[in-house]
Length: 96
Image 1 (cartoon, rainbow, N blue to C red):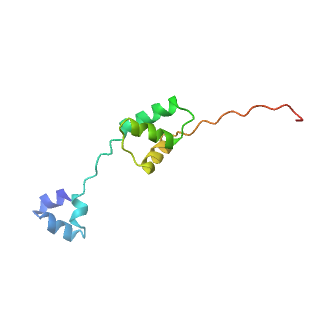
Image 2 (tube, one colour; image 1 turned 60 degrees about the vertical axis):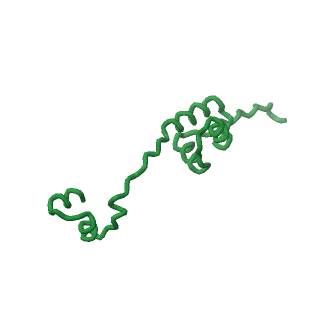
Image 3 (cartoon, helix red, strand yellow; image 1 turned 60 degrees about the horizontal axis):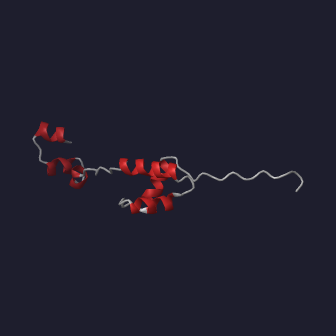
């Protein structure tokens, strides 16, 4: 869009009007999520506390000062491939 504006000497308003775009769409800039530190700490805690699920890990993260929504935490937990490690069941003798 910027290239068209420069080439034809159009204003932003006129270029968006011709392209049938709202100016807010053209001006929108995505925010950087900055999840790298949160993801790293989530993995570390999950490895330390193998039996903790995302809810209990969220409590630990909150104590460390991370402000994270439970839905976002669950999404990151799944994206990192984390899951609660199951306990092994005891083997039972046959016929009991």
